[in-house]
Amino acid sequence: MSGSYPAPTDDGDLLVYKSDGSAGNGIYVARGRGEGFGPIAPLYVPDEGTTFDGVASSLDGPLFVTRCLDDVCEPGDRNGVWAVELGGAEGPTSRKIGAVPYVWGVQPVEALGLLVFTDGEDILAVPLAEAGLSGRANRSRSVSR
Image 1 (cartoon, rainbow, N blue to C red):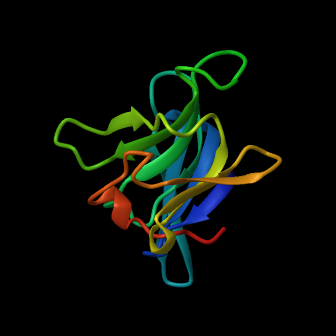
Image 2: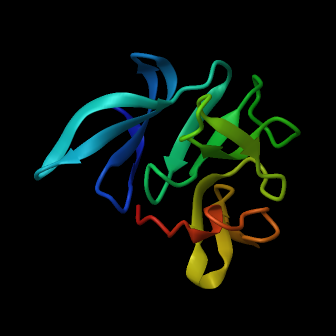
């Protein structure tokens, strides 16, 4: 299997980033099967920008991704971390998490009430409530990577 930024879910599926996937640039999933994984399939491939570093405790919960929607990928109004709900009747819905800049390695840690991430130099965190994550999103568990 090719790809990068592998992230297992608690259910045993594997999320990966593919820049050259069958549906384009985005997050793909390989379902856990026996002692390995099944074929890779598109999970969240938006029409614009680069979407990578996906993490989710399960495919039923929110998917957290880093998105770059311009040429320079710097912090700003459009680039950053997004929470994606995959199960909507009209397809995925997403929203930018305003309290979090353009970073990587986002991990919700319910036991501490924090959203942990890195800017490439430091490990940082914001409270889940400050990130606007409550209810179902707040129940996401940390994913080991």
